[in-house]
Image 1 (tube, rainbow, N blue to C red):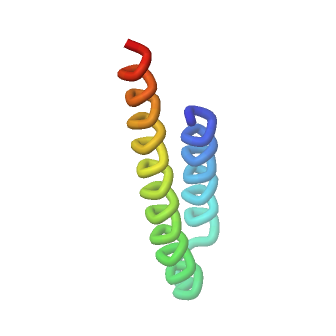
Image 2: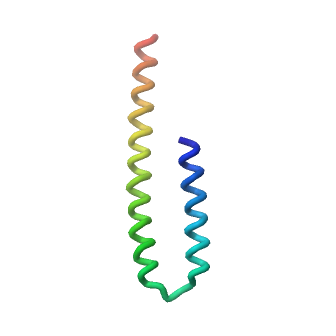
Image 3: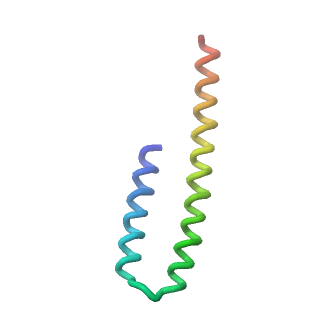
Amino acid sequence: MEGQKEEMERREGEDGGMERREGEGMEGWREERERMEGWREERERGWRDGEKRERERMEGWRAEDE
């Protein structure tokens, strides 16, 4: 999971750089970026849910072993 988090942070840094380079007055770009932000939040939420399920499963195994 660490690798995915680092990759996301790197991508966000690239996005920010691109936004600054492009400058203002690009409504279409802003709308696209807002849509992508929503998509990214959905993806992160899915990852967190997956991590939570994985953690619960691992804790369940640990409880069975004891």
